[in-house]
Amino acid sequence: MTSDRRIGRRLLALNAVLLALLLAVGLWSFWAIVPKPWRDHDPAAEPRPVTARGELAELETTAVEVFRSAAPAVVHITTLASATGLFSLDVQQIPEGTGSGFVWDKDGHIVTNFHVIRNASGAVIVLADGSSWQGRLVGSYPAKDIAVLAIDAPGQQLQPIALGSSADVQVGQMAFAIGNPFGLDQTLTVGVVSALDREIASVPGRTIRNIIQTDAAINPGNSGGPLLDSAGRLIGVNSAILSPSGVYSGIGFAIPADEVNRIVTQLIRHGTIVRPSLGVSLAPDQLTRRLGVEGVLVMQVDPGGPAARAGLQPTRRDVAGNVHLGDVIVAIEDDATGSTEDFFAVLEERRPGDEVTLTVLRDGERTTRPVTLGRDA
Image (cartoon, rainbow, N blue to C red):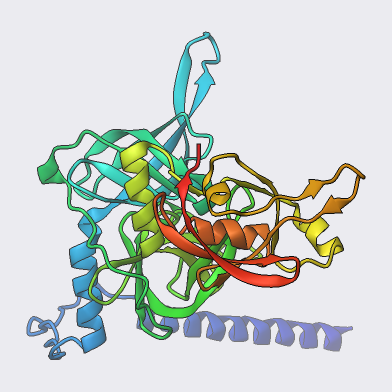
């Protein structure tokens, strides 16, 4: 027993020694790494010299200049919704969503997407200088996702966007998007034009054609903002993204500037789109497909209308009850009209008073007929 006690005391003593050594090592390590404010710092220490970078690369210079020239035209749009107060029946306007837009002219017209202001009871427009203005709706065209608002800001506070053309845009050229993604004002993203002649669906479900595809990052809040070329000119209005998650995934779409220019002009002038008309009623596409007809089948012709003056024939039923198919319009000028969607898309590119040539099938014979377009009532 005495021997066991001695061994136990020795083990306790050994453990105590080891514990003391570990404590000493810990204290030494703490002493080595913890700053010691009572020691003198190096009084000769100076900031490191900055390495000269030289001139900006050409791409960087272009991006800087595009942003510098175009950003003053870009606005932040906050849409408002009407709501009744919790403890009163007073109707108040509360923020509902945000988007982007840009100054169109010195008269205070602001261009954005229709879906940005859809169902809104009002809108607050914040200019690049930080001033806020109440926006009012001038007109909208949901089928092309374009809307025009107006503010009463003085002309000297308004810098209109430089307008370019989408007709000569090429795949591979640089593209610059400015907007307010996630509410972050004046954000620039850079990419290229990835593809042309894409199609997307508008709010009413109509197909918007000739869409520009870009990989310049477009996120929620960018909608309605400008897509620019390397000269800082508008080539499109950012409208949509293709993303399973709802945020940017590499594919964005913009409505081409030439289409925007035509639509905005009409909205400012008339408050609506003045459509050209042929004065015909067309058969549904399902019917023409069942009949094996290629083109659009004329069901009715308005008396005295453009089509009637051009001699187009409607579908009719004779006294014996036999149905005689009317003329089938297969093209307007050089644009094929294989469906009613094609027909109206081609027609919308024209104006009332334009003279166009229709290619028509009648009893299997192909003929051409000149028509002066009227105005849709």
